[in-house]
Image (tube, rainbow, N blue to C red; front, side):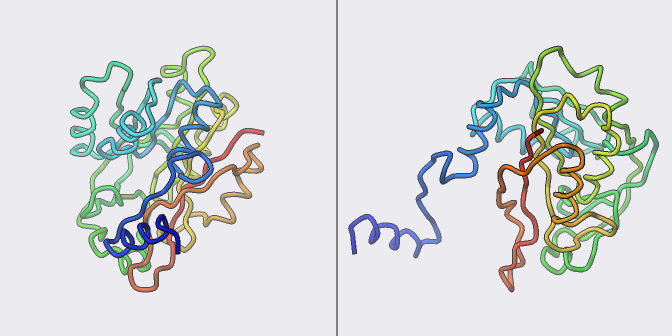
Length: 241
């Protein structure tokens, strides 16, 4: 056994790993390369929560373009505003995106980021008890088409990231006119039913094909069943044909 292999096995015993940070081996390096290759200048961050995705773009991927984040929960949006306050190229909105302009009750999860406009299925709660719903909050919902002209600048290449806890198709249905200007999509895809009425991975991939997007990369979302080890969700990156 080589010295390199022995070192890796020793690190594995600590629950850690060393992976080459290259576009062919590491998901973040791959996404950074894709954004740079496609010259993305604007990221629409749907389901921003407290700004985790945007901070990853800035701190880990070195993204210097504009970010526009959408978060409906009031307390999460306050934290989001705090995270973005010193970043002149990061704008936030306190509403959800969907297929209509209206008010809806969102189910608040104990861990905040699992909050959804849809009912949570038992598989989700069983795999992540901390995600159980603890109440409701009335929020505003807008379509992307209704706000797109306010946030888009001419000539920008755009990535639309959707982490809407099963509401992804609704977001896309409210963006039918905007999508022709969007080059890349990053969407959470469920392998099992986690929210009532959501499209599972096979149906979502097929739906996105009808919208003119091909799947070009997959990332582990980090959500797996702790007992069986079964993966529950992945993130798919799609490119306009």
